[in-house]
Length: 264
Length: 283
View 1 (tube, one colour):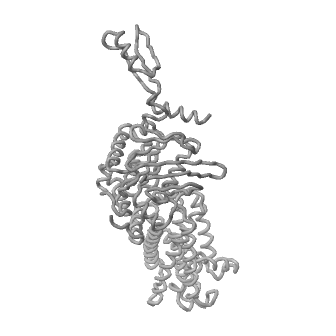
View 2 (tube, one colour):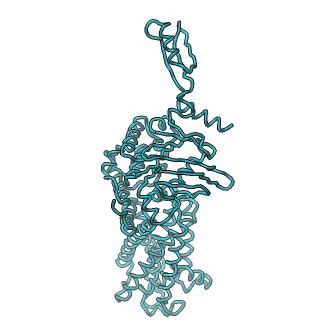
View 3 (cartoon, helix red, strand yellow):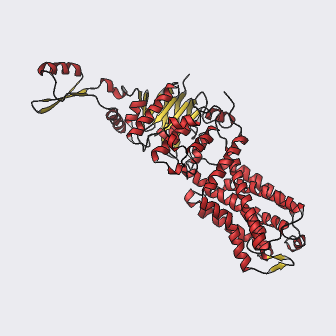
């Protein structure tokens, strides 16, 4: 008898399957991928001012939208769809097979990563062609961008899985999860200029990863001169990295400990 | 060695004692059916055997392995069993063939996906999205996913709910075929005719305990219980309960020249016996 397949191998297979399933839900694909672009169009048309020399609000806003995309396609999507899978009995069925939980997590992470990449490409292309978005030219900025996307995807995935035990049912999941995300977006300086928010909001936001992802993305999309306008008068790149790692590890431990295959 | 060995199994939920000391031995290659009303402890027992639930007390060995064990060894164990749960209701965005091929990748020694699709009679539907299948077809897909790993032991939970009579017959012959391949099968069902058609032995569970384990034909003294002989005499329908139906029929043969009008000899059905047992247990 041959050996049972390894967890990583099965995780990749699950990723392919998850992506296939995702692309077949056409309405949700269109909505998920185009929503950030629609928001950019709205905000870009309403706020036409420049907020610093050479920095339009659209430019500022794109950084927030890319960071939000990480939270939406990871945390929000998973915390809503996993309770549904649990209600449907799909998770219990998986539990009855030799597939390990790690493979399920890897599959979800791949799905989040791919939908994130598509979303970012659309957002940046749309921003570049229609809203005069300036792309970073410095290679080191693209390096920061890459690790922010990878770390952001990973932490957003594990936190989404961890939070998936909070909604009592798949039906109610969206009502529980969406407000959390929207409030976090307001607090984290996605829709408004972060430094103009009340300081208590800034302090609450600083606990959560979205604020750091947003600030990190600003360091990618805004000129370095803008760093002086941040709360700490710097991009705090090292601290951002550290905080994301901490959330990743904490989220991973919680999701492994609390993950439930069925509702009871 | 028995495929399943259970001694003194107990499980409570809050104040409810769902399983109160169950013993079971299931041997290799048999179809063993668990019968019992809702809330009797049937599902709890099976879910403990499947490793879905923890137990409070008792010894459980399934394929020589304690289902409560976690980790790597648990994966090796799950590689050898198949579980057909009550149906899932997911969005069904994959085709039959995609789903079955994907699940086959979870096992070390799977069956051929195409053969499994054919065995459950879904060849014509293999390229269809699951969301477009009928209830009975979805159920057959569930069964296909349960057997794709080529299991030594298969759990079937209410497998034919929602089947039309023809599909049930086809399903029964599929299960019969699995038994002939040496698969041990644990069947929970509400349909007593299904248990009668398939099971080598049945256990009746009520109030968290096993009332009796027997063959379907002998359960509850069925094979020795009185038979009902009916016939028509001078236009009048007559019936008589007897322990010796053969003697009665031969007496009748001498009374009538040729055919005895409307003669029938019936023994209580498995359902009659079962209902009596459940009723008695309720007292």
